[in-house]
Image 1 (cartoon, rainbow, N blue to C red):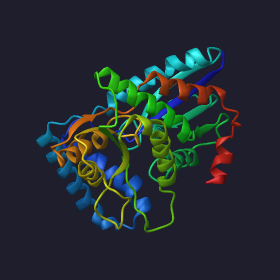
Image 2 (cartoon, one colour):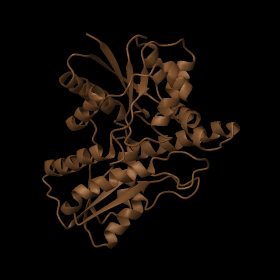
Image 3 (cartoon, rainbow, N blue to C red):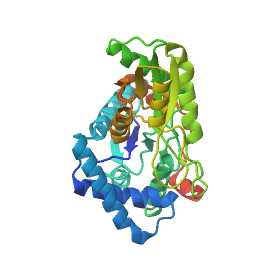
Image 4 (cartoon, rainbow, N blue to C red):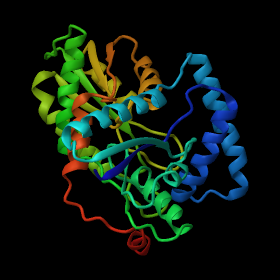
Length: 330
């Protein structure tokens, strides 16, 4: 039986507010992500990392927050392994977990896999961008450049099609509402939240905005008849220029101004809950305390998501490309 490896990959934020873990995480993000898209001088990095780590530590501590991302990713790995076994039992699937900015890093996981067995890296992000799949591609290319030719390919998979994710998300929203005994109707609004991006980034790059908007519009198209209002909101930062609009807190204010008293808040732009979906969503909802809010979880390890990923992995007609050829194309 042939063996095939799948590596689920996320940012991998620390599970607790411990300052040391937050500092390492912030430092790695600055080196591996922020400096790749913004011209930050190297001398400024230590102060920025320290400031970010202290801010996250203080905020998480004040809010009593612990990130669920790590256990969720482990559950996704188990769910995907089971789905792959059902989808293609003739293959000896091996599912692993790696993180972009926490141990175990992707390179370390790849080091431990047999060179003659193919590897699919599944970056668990909704849209392809310089902040998501491109990080993974660079990591694979850098890892491969330091090693001899590998007979079996290592590939970073493209994300699921926005229409597929929109269908999964629409079903998920209705199922989560039903589980809470809630029937959507014209008196309830739905706020769809995603990570924002700069509209005019400092250098040309794929921001993922168009794909994210396609996903949002696909969900809205499917659920528009079930709610009185469906509106998108962006979880923006505050520095660097003009960000996507409306921000999540502004979208919630618009919901209140339209006369709605009840709202469902769904962070559609993420595949697993983390500080942005949970904590930032909590803070955004707090700006409109008069709203009766239902804060819905991400898809997480929903069986439909695992099945969609398994179908994509098992049924792809993608040609195996040796790592040497991937290097030449980077």
